[in-house]
Length: 257
Image (cartoon, rainbow, N blue to C red; front, side, top):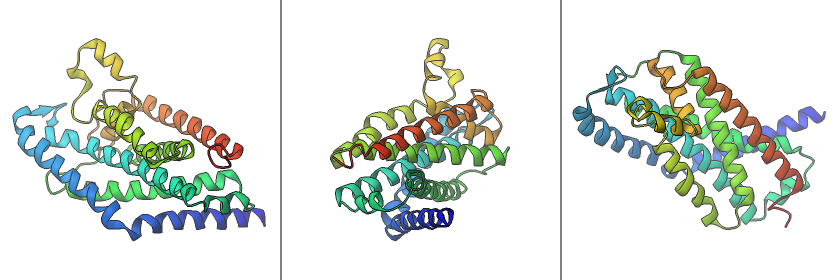
């Protein structure tokens, strides 16, 4: 009976989260498509013709996986951080706290919503990219695994951010000052082999490098880092952030105060 109730609670939270971003699709689904179209036009068509090939592929083909991953990262994070903080701000998160719902159900419900939005955005951006380049798939399993692990990682990170956040400004600080720099320096627009050896080593301290390259391997079959290592790092980060989120929710940090 408890398992059935937990499943009902999980699906209810997940459906609520999906309904939330689908209801305002003009704000959640359309902007990433427009933004990525501009990236494709400016970086792909205009600048790409001057750069030429990179890693044995046209510059447009090379940056497509990175641009898709950039959208996945941004949207999975934003969906959970804004939704959970709104629930805190409106004081309706208390309904979950007093309900006989395990902490893992709350986490999986919110993270599941972020993953659903990330997957939908990934599909939309992929379709948009087909108007500019012939999208090829080298290893579909690598694409799916990297997509799921990355979206769940940043959805959980968004949940942790929302738990700590006290104002809406706190929600926007991490994407602006952390995610954006790490993403642009994560090999989305260039191969690490173009960097001096010292900066290649420094770049490998950026976790987004492993996500982008794991995803690029799935599409093109090339990667600047070991794909197995990339998957391993994503799994470790997912487990670590889940443990943090579970601890914070169990203790009521930032919620029961």
